[in-house]
Image 1 (spheres, rainbow, N blue to C red):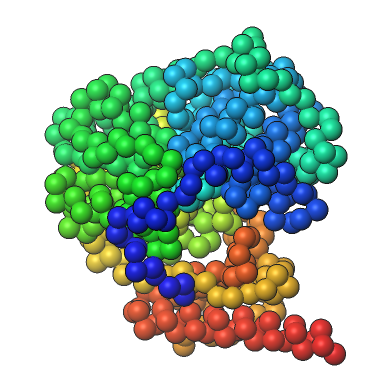
Image 2 (image 1 turned 180 degrees about the horizontal axis):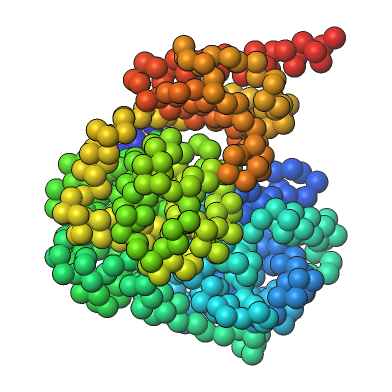
Length: 554
């Protein structure tokens, strides 16, 4: 288990702040070498991420990725506008400039924020879907330049095709390969104009992102009941892309809400430190210390991460809710209060999310669709309305409009925060109380994630396991019910495995960026039972690694 910094939950020490000038200088001066693995373009579950200081997010990365996307759009026949937005990380604005230079040179119509402001991930998804509604051609797509809740020195670049959600590997592998090929050829073939010419180009257009999104919120959340109840709401944008959205929401709907801070600073000096440094993770009690400290001032409070695709719910005396707990409450409430949703719409969860969701789905009579980690697996279900809700244990989720049609196919932390206010307003109890009542009916889960060391060879073994290889018949004293390497909801590979018994389970997956593997585990018995599950999981996987090493040595 990683150690918790003694600075966690405390105001950030100025000595630990990133040097913005050095960060920006490195963006332009350092040239990545695609022959070095850590300097290549690499799309994970949330796009390409890195830092200019480690030569993993630099000008050539963005120029080459943008050219690769322009190429992909042409090959796929995507001719509508490309909606593009940025968050408040220091590297986001220079990356936007680089992208615009390439898109303009390629004749791609782009829509940038009318006021040169910030644009949350869910707003880009909403804009794409709104434009594409009832169209069969001239479809739009989008880009969000954000590393999500990652540290201030990081940058990120995500591509959302016309379905509005995260691009799947069939697209990202093409873009990734093409981008690395451009860098290997010293940027030969990358079209580019000056920033001045890009901004003057007829294809670069200003777009009001705020008004359409804010005006449409009543179609997905019951803003009337929130206003009429007078429920008091605290909102912390955590210095992120939603910062300019909340006041228009308050003004439009007349809700009783207070924005506790509107400060934006690329060093994020206003944050309290997370467990290992500065990170705008709204699911972390350390990063959320400011809002948690205000829990008695509001009936309900919430925050978003830097691109507003995640949510953190502060529920009165319960403080910051565990993301799994809030997902379970949100699912129970939504499926009980959205009478226009399709009766067959299911509940989407990832394999590493709490089994409390399974129990809720059974109780409300809805099909459970369990998929691998990654929000991309919910896109099709949300788009077609076969899923009413899709959520991840890492505090990312979205759900349908009140009429049962698609709202967004990417995570939307804004509507998850407003939903907490709707729940509080309509039921006269906050989500924390709702979860406490739920455990009295369905049991109390004990859930945790730990990291264990694994070298690249061991990570590859874990990623390519077959169910038979693990060789377990019992888990913490209970017979094993299932051992899965493919998700039951869609048959896709987990990239690891999940072992389940009656009152507990564990899942193990290799990290994509670190020499560790992650063990997610849950017990419906006790903390002691949870620890037994974790120990047996680590022992079984260590034995698997040892067996592979012996076989290799022979």
